[in-house]
Structures are given as C-alpha cells and as structure tokens.
Length: 414
Image 1 (cartoon, one colour):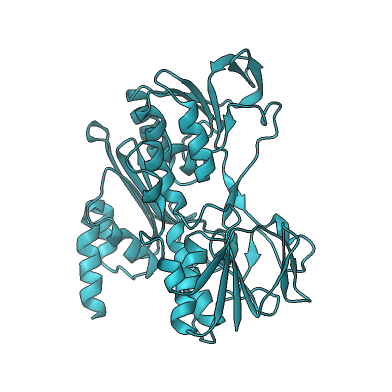
Image 2 (spheres, rainbow, N blue to C red):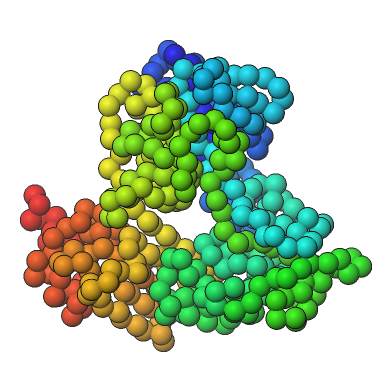
C-alpha cells in the first residue's frame, strides 16, 4: 500500500505516525511544501519572543525520528491532483502515484487587496520564513503597524513588543478577536494591550502602503498616514486548497469529508484546517481550524486509510489565547443561541471575566479571561452535551462553580 500525505504540519505528521503503527509494511511519503521539515506553527509566537530557538519549533526532537519510522519526507510542493490517475503532480514536474492520499495542507494567510502589499518590509506571520524575516526587521524602537487583531494577530503581540517594537494595531471591526470573544471580553483584551503600551486603532484599516525612503508610509481608510518600519498583515487565514482546482473534489468552505474523513474521491482523505467535517454542537459540517481538531482528524483518517473503521465524533470550536500574559478562552457556541439563557461575571479590577451560554439545561458555550484553573471542565461539559439538571440554576447563580458541576456530572455518569 502506498500512502501519500500532502502537508508536513501537525495533521500530516500525526497521520504518518499513526499509519506506520497500523500499516507496518506500507510506503509512506509526506510532501513538505515549505521545505522546512516538520514544525509546529503554533510555536512561532515563542520564537518571535525569543523564548525558544528554531529547534524548539520542531514537532519531534530526534532528527532521525521519521527516518526510523520509515516515513519519507520529500521537500516538494503539490500543484495538482489527478484523481482519475490516482496521482499528485509536483512543482518539479514529477508525478507521484498513490493508493491512499491524505490532504493536510493546513491554512494559508488571507491576502489584503491593497496597493503595496508586495513591498519590502511588508510581511505576514504564518511560516518560519515569515518569522525569520520579521525578526531580521525588528530592532528596539522599530515602528510596526499591524493590520488585524484576530487569533493570529493577538498571539504575536508579545513577540513584537518583547523585541522593543512600537506597535500600532488596526482593528477593522473595532473589536479584537471578535470571532472568538463577546464584546466585553474583546474590550478587556484591548484595554490590557493598551496598558502595555500597544496603540489600538478601531474602525479603520489600511488603504495602501508606500515606500518612503528606507521606511514605509501606511495610509489608512480614514486618510491618516502612519510611518512604519514594518507592516504586518494579519487579516486571517483560509484553507490551502487552491491546487485542487479542477480535480473534482467536493469543496465548500473546505474539503467536504464524511465521518471517516473521506472526500468524495475514491482513496482521498482530508484532515485539519482544510477539512469541512461535522461539528459536534451544530450538527453540520464546519471548518474548525485549530490544532487539537487537526490532530484528531488526522488520527481518524490514518486509521481508516490503513483499513480500519473509526468515526470522527465531531469537532468543537476551542480557542485559547495568551495575549501578553492575559489568558483568554472560548469554547463551543460562545455567542449562545437565540432564546437561550446566559450568565456573565465581570471582575475588571483583577482582569477576570466569565460567560456561560445554555440551551435548555445544556451548556453550549463559554468564554473566560483570567480563569486558568480547571478550565478544561468547561470544554468537557460542552463537548459531552451534559444534561445539567439542577446544576444549571446553580451555574446561573454562580458560574465559577463549573468544576463542581463537571465532577457531579462525571459521578452521575459513572
């Protein structure tokens, strides 16, 4: 059996390791389109803040780990899928045949459609190459203008500030991490960043970027002009699936897969940020681009590629964000549902916030800031769709008792 995996990130390499376990004699080839070797994209913020060096970003410490498992990693980029011929076309002109194929190409940065986006000094922050370029551009006092304050935009703030950058963040919607936090939580995160010297400019975005000698000139949609040494475009990501055009694979927001991570094409599977799989709360296919979800989908896909029969139970939206030391989390349907009940607890003096959302007597979503102990209990209650019974009223009266509610539900289930 010849297995080919496109993508050498967390999903692709997890699948390769699981395949070797369940198919000891198979051929396993992983296509590393970046050519960097397997690394953890979520380690890049720690590289930016100088907490680790590049070796610390590697998925496995042993440089011979994959060789020992007889996993062949090729520094090659897929450019097309020939489903009829069961083959992948590569950028170097080769054609690589497969019996089973896993597409795990992850996300790519969304691109701002503005003048000057290709100028020197303009960067995204998604790859190791991006991180190297940003680090080389930063010196104490460097003026950095960052467009975007979503998840990616917020996790890199610490690295930029720790290197002495004078950071200005443009927030088009007016709310930081608006896709993972309710308004009050967004407001608290913005206030925290401002207290650390970061300038937040809401309800505006970049109109164009120009060179001004050795520096940049960033013109905003308001007409204001900001001088900058570095411009960071952090306006979100999208599934890296452009190379699949014309392949016949079913794509909506991502590659449509069934409960076994199979696409509509025979022998072709997908996992991670590219996969549109069932969400355990909404009960419909969604793209949940988070690493825990990617790893689990990859595990399920690999077992089934090796001939097993295992179903994916469904993804869950999980966001854990460390913004300059302020830890925030959101789980599930953090916005709640129309007609559902909710409770909100605020302690601004201690930068603590907690919000719980209910549907009948089931906890369906939660948001927290400053609560880090036992926070996994919220995920457990939401993901298992636990019927809370009398505990719902107790949580409405005191949302901080979620751990007690979780333990009580676990004892009841036992």
